[in-house]
Structures are given as C-alpha cells and as structure tokens.
Amino acid sequence: MAKSEGELAVSVLDLVALHPNEAPGAGIARSVDLAQHVEAWGYTRFWLAEHHSIAGIASAATAVLIGHVADATKTIRVGSGGVMLPNHAPLIVAEQFGTLEAMYPGRIDLGLGRAPGGDYQTMRALRRSMAQSGDDFPELLEELRTYLGPDRPGQAVKATPGQNTNVPITLLGSSGFSAQLAARLGLPFAFAAHFAPESLYAAAEMYQRQFRPSETLARPYMMVGVQVVAAETDAEARKLFTTAQQRFLRLIRGQAVELLPPVDSMDELWNPAERAAVQSKLGAAIVGSNVTVKAGLERLVSATGASEVIVVTDTYRHEDRLESYRRVAEISKTVETAVRVG
Image (cartoon, rainbow, N blue to C red):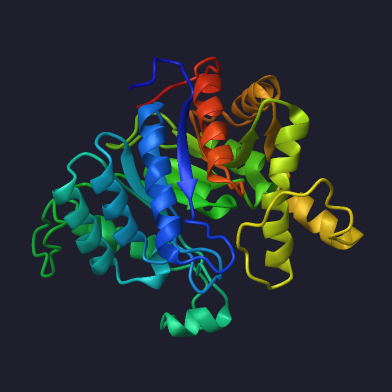
C-alpha cells in the first residue's frame, strides 16, 4: 500500500535480536514474520543492520538475510541499514546487491555506513587496517557507485551482476560527516537517532541546508531511525521499553545483548552513571500510548524535516513487537510531513 502525498512513511530496522540461549534460526524466523506483517500494514521498507561478534544479534550476514526476507515477502522494499562499506571491497558489495536486484527487481535498497560494526578485535578479524578511520568512505562510495552505474569508458573492472542496476543508495550516519556527503551528492540521508541522538538536529539542518539536487533526488529526503514502543497505555509501553534499556545497559557493560523480559523498574539494575549513559543513548525514543507516540512523531518530523521514520522496536515478546508496529502503522496515517519525495 503506497503512502498518500504528505503522509509520513514508516519503515523497519531489524537486528535479528535473540533471546538468551536461543538458536539464530528462531530469531531469523521472527524477523521474517515481522516483515510479512509490516508489509501488510503498509510499511515502506524493511532494513537489516550489519553487526559483528555481538552476542544476541544475528544480522552479521546482512546480504544473505536481505535475500531471505525478500523471498518471503512480495512488495515491501528490503535492504541494509546498513552495510558498513569499509568492511568490504566495493566490488563485492556491488555484486551482492546487483544479484539481489536481479532476483527481486525494484525492491532492494543499499544503505551504507562507515563504522566498523564491531570492536577492535572484530576489525582485525574483518581484515580491516587499524589505520582506517572511515575518512576514505567517499572514495569507497564512488568506486561502488561506478560498479552499480552505467559502464564508463575504459572501465576495466565491472560488477556482474551489478553494472547498470542503479540500486538505490542511502547514506547512514550519526554525525555531520555523512550528512554533508549525502547533501553534496544529492542522496537520501538516514540518521541513526535510535542509538546516537546527540547530533540529530544539527545533522538534519546541515543536510537540508547543504543539499544539492542530483539525478537521484531533486529535493532532500531525510530519514530518521528512532526507537518506538507503542502500547495501550503509557505505563504499559514504558514497561515494555525496559527490555531495550536493559540491552543498552548490557552493551555499555560489555555483556551479551539478548532480549530480556521487561521489569517494573530499572532502579535496581543500574547505577546513576549507567542510567545517564543509557538515557543519553535512548534520548530520542518515543514510548507510550497512541496519543503519546503520535505527538512524539509529529515533534520529530517538525524538528528534522524528515519524510520517513525508520522504526526500531525490540520487545521481549514477539506479540508485543507486532502490536507496537501495528499501532505505529495506524498512527503514521495521521502524521503529515512538510515534503514527500518518493
């Protein structure tokens, strides 16, 4: 179902979260089920994120999962949110996503980030040089776009499949770096406010102000990834949200980040410094009843100029996750954006 002009587009970002001692296949099956539900509810896209060597997250082989989800759905766009480009040779990424585009024409997205997606030891295992800072991301991006675009005169290496597929690229970021690059190249930009909200408004303003029209976009297209939990009441949503809070608490402690049951209060689980750190990471979260979530989405859209919100919802019970996404689908129909560029 296509969104009406001016209606807020909503999408999903999924990390294939696992319960303690759970086999990855069970988490993958839940992700497929979620994708099938949100497709029926009118979500625009279903993205999977590249993370490595993190206990509790099973989305490392991102391109493989994209193919699996695309095969289990019919119309929703499926892609990466994102592939961490410095981890891979651009030719390999072009071949993978060119192949996906050949299999599922018109449904594949390529969201790109420049972070390692793991810690120092993981970077070594990925064969990344310790000298890499992400500053070469623009050059890697240009090489990748060469492999996905039309043949160029004298081009010696070509992606097959990949060449001339023009798989849509979105730049992802949590700072001004990717915002400026996306603006300069006239590409869509997605900000990761679901875990790093500090620079959201500055990056959004920078992207909108510096945007240069391109063959891809005539006007800026801003997307914001944000944690959302919607439930019958504010109190119920806040309790469900303690699962996400526990995940971030365990993350900063260097522990496994499996989904844990919600608790009545976090007070006994964290100290004041940990509480401040978690609340900082989740500062953009929108948690509550339909009325509260609608108000939060309207504030977010008004403050950032976003045309699309990429919703991150991690609850312990799959049923609660489905219910939250169902509610957000209904709420989004009543939230308008200033500009819709499709």
